[in-house]
Image (cartoon, rainbow, N blue to C red):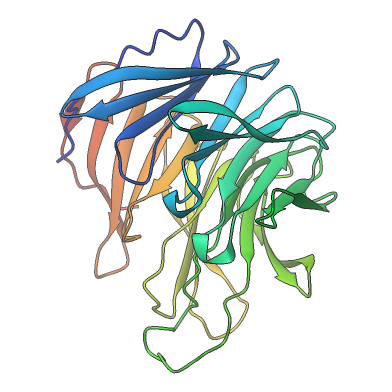
Length: 313
């Protein structure tokens, strides 16, 4: 059962596009078409606006918090083609780094698992994906996957650091590869991996019939199976799985919704998927022992109404 425990008046002056809690769940960052980012303390059921970040010249689409081992860092991306990494120092937020090497709107940002270091992936409407890395001495390097998606890239997500099968073979000392999954306006989901410092396409996944709006690689505890979720303007969410024995991915339609599905998010354990879309609802889905995906709860975002139901795909 899902329930609404709190609602926050952000006082944004236009549509809110993203809201992200930090690692500890005590700070909330929101971004909007009003070009601002707001950061709130959310403790003990109370919320306090602690900062408003201004640095973008267009709608801010998405936010990503870095792991706290790097300090209080948040990345933002915007229609203005910029990616900004913000840092809190002694209670004051300011720009740590600004990346301006995209030719069109930057739609998605995501930090890599902290074991890889301070690494950020960005997907842009210019069709490319940038991977920005901090060397730790204040300098940054960027690599670009050009023509990753024709027409544009809408979403990126990093694979977990834990290698598939690591739980069953704890003595396997193989260093995990950096891998990302992306979704684009070419209706495709693509998997990329870094080899000897270069990013290469590992797999192209075809199954959607319209723009892919979001992709999310499920967290892993080291079981052999890898899982990716994707959602699209074709109203569908697809679950892609790889059993660890090769490079073949199978797919299953989780559900066909009544509207565009915009966003996906996995639980920390990777066994529950949250889907939100144009029907103004957030639904939670879980896989049964028989391999069927069932809706365990949904919330109407407008009224906070909750319904339990079991719908198999």
